[in-house]
Length: 318
Image 1 (cartoon, one colour):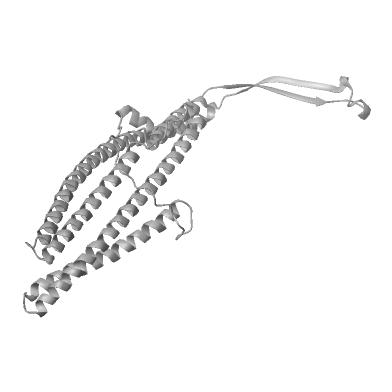
Image 2 (tube, rainbow, N blue to C red):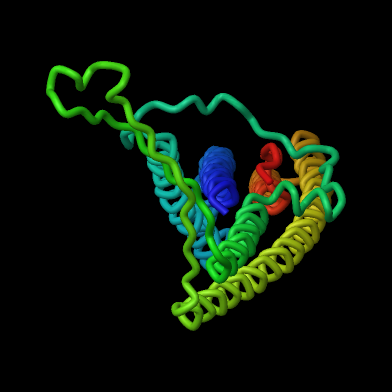
């Protein structure tokens, strides 16, 4: 039972490590996504500023209605608000990363790595999941300890035999205490049988059996929860990855439209506003692509955590 509880403590330690690692990865990926969106938001805001200035000149010259200017200003204000919100989120992620990595908030962090989505995720089979998940290993060890406790409690109902021994010195004179003849050995059997405490011991046995039943229910709950968690994470990752692929296709189309608009502007077929609108639309699609990519990366972290991370099952202790 003690060995099983030691294994349970080790599994709980692994579960805490996995929680911290997953939170660090999730926060880092969110920070990189926010930083990329912040850069693109700034570029789009510069374009929208030019568009708004062009509409203002047209309105002042009486060439356009004021509603076009209002719409341009509204889009610009929205981008300004998004930029402030993204900047606040980036700082919050930096502070969270510092805390998670045991550093003071505001310390410089290495943000050079650009994470990529993996091509293949090895989910494995369900039996492997039960071995990798530290929460399941902890529940299994707790159940084992509770089962061993039943045997220990039942053993109290039976007679106990033991051998008692003693070693000492005995002499009539103090000067003889350290002679070989003064050494005395005492050895004999001991017998005990708590027959009059049988009722109390049986109650203790029933108590350990109840605790084992509770541990069994907790283990089954942990297994079912792990299976549901992994299936949900797999489904979410698959769908988020598909959404990212669709966003990438839409982003490519938007970039093609921006290139065509620039070609028409250079050929004198469209005005500058139409070209800038197409470029701003392409940047907005790039924002959507980055958001979809961030969602897929977050889903991958959640999937890795649901599958038990990289922890290996420790050597058997029973």
